[in-house]
Length: 132
Image: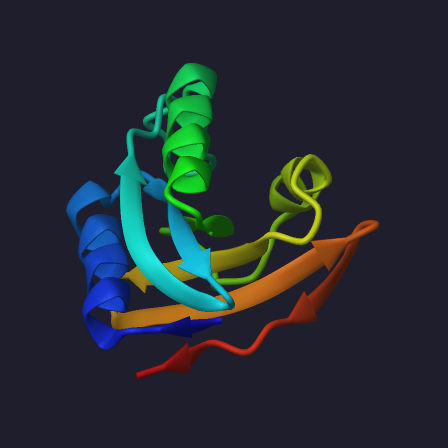
């Protein structure tokens, strides 16, 4: 996915703002280029997992698709571990084939790190994240 530095900044700011809990949201895209970031509330309010309200997510999906865009990525943060998919992430990704997973690692002693993955059939692979 190609993403503007300003949009990536919105995601990182969201992760920092919601720390110590995980943040979550979605990225709209067109032809592999991120067009908008949609922050959502983590209903779990937990540092270990995230949950997006189903109705909120469906409304966002409708808005994205009605605008001629795609769901390019689902993003969330890891506040106590590296930005690598957990087993919970892998299980959730099974419901969203073909969608990239952006994970922001935020910890007290390091700069935020953003990584992108594709998760298919329980297998995790790095996805290119081109910041422009």
